[in-house]
Image (cartoon, rainbow, N blue to C red; front, top):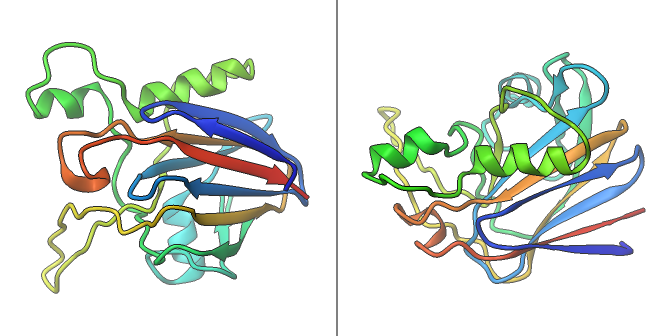
Length: 196
């Protein structure tokens, strides 16, 4: 992969990913949750976690799985995952309302804001923030279906790598959440590597 982009902790980035090219999301320092989206232009086709779960028949995609859009077609192929394979497809992106639930009264960066800022840099604007694929996020569930908020087990240098099956825009957010344990309370930088 020829292009490397650093995304600072608590910030986001959008990149165009042509069909056939690969993108690696690198957990540079370890322990960082990354919200991940894909948009197919033009129109409203987006990466969809509930359509992906229905297609692959399990909760967490692994290497060899395809990631599906809301139009029920595969748009990404997971080619490699060097992390422990702990990711989440259930939890919504953090937003201002979520931080108010934690008692935050002033400004706080959010994954929803990061998404909007990142696509705006490419001249795109979409009102609704789709449900993300939460890379490296540890949300264990028990036999009764109760969810927990665990710390990410991702190690420094772990990478989640996808190949584009169609032209698309990939959006990532180095999650700003510092009020629960998902990223160890300290948002960190991540890196993207893009290329054939």
